[in-house]
Amino acid sequence: MQGRTYAMRPSRVLRKLRAGKVALCTKLNLSDARGAEIAAMSGFDCIWTDMEHVGNDWSSVEKQIMAGKMYDVDTIVRVARGSYSDYIRPYEMDATSIMVPHIMSLKDAKAVVRSTKFHPLGLRPVDGGNADGAYCHIEFMDYIRQANEERFNVLQIEDVEALEELEEIIALPGLDMIFFGPGDFSQSIGAPGQMNHPLLIETRKQIAELSIKHNKYAGTVGSIDNYAELVDMGYRFISVGADVIALGQYYRGIVDEIEKRVSGRIQSVYAESGKEGEV
Image (cartoon, rainbow, N blue to C red):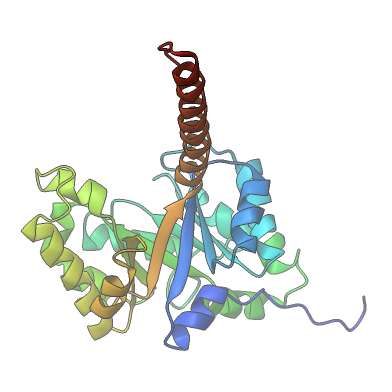
């Protein structure tokens, strides 16, 4: 329509973070857009879909992004490590953020920033003819400015090698959020699954402290039980729960409860008849 002004959808996560609040996310392993919609309807600020560990294709990711947008919910796409094209496609589908796993060094982090930020912070290739640019309806310079302001990158610290340059990585201009991955980190330090390992606890705290020092946002995975502790530590983006866990617990709960009730009923029938029975 002539005279209409188009703009990029503002990030719900960044709106909360800039207001000093905590953003709540949940992870999706399944590719179905309806699952993404249910998560978005539930009140999360962000849904996190995965292409590192999950065989999602670009079509399914695009539909999940659309499902989130219907409820003004951000989508983070954790990408597989690859070329710059793998980093910019989610943004151009109008994902609010990408998460890049296993940042190993300052050089590695600089390369990611270069590919995910426009001038003057980086040299992300420009198109504008996709969903994020309103299909060329956002003027070129406005598109670049809005993308740098309303889209963010998330760099994951999951390996002991990154600790040598941790502060330099976190202080890097153009880096928006640093995300601590405790699972892979526990492997990296030779203590798989030991979430109470002293180095893991120390690194988690250090990331939060350095993020505050350098005016960056710290993110990590958490639970209902340790959510408040992570917030007190300085984390402002916390991912809690996953679709596969929710479904598994729900279905196991149904089967367990039915088996318990049926077992009790059958045993009661046999007791009344004076016979023993097995379920």
